[in-house]
Length: 145
Image (cartoon, rainbow, N blue to C red; front, side, top):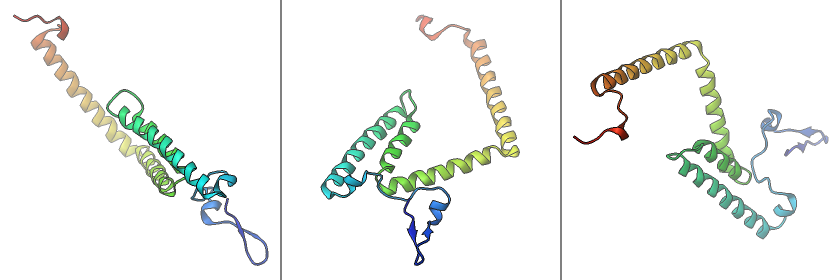
């Protein structure tokens, strides 16, 4: 924490630290921060590793895999060194928390359940019409006529 002290020597905390949030900035070890060239190479390494993880997440978006989870993991890697990534993660966490709280609202839950039931009903009707019209033949078993 970046606690300071006032004129009387008492410890003073920033509002973010009082709420339990860490201060923004690099989390590199002190001996790395003390040497500019080493710190820049440290940041470059963190950036490359984070970029590889984010790129893997982007590839997983259309393919099977936890794409968004991997992208956020890459952002968390970047957030160890870059303030902009820390701010993005804080904003994302706040928005996800707000969405979760809205989803737990009884009116919203009821609406979502009704919409889900309507969607499943429409899907069931379409499947029944397809089976009635074409039968239960699997696409790979259909022969040309």
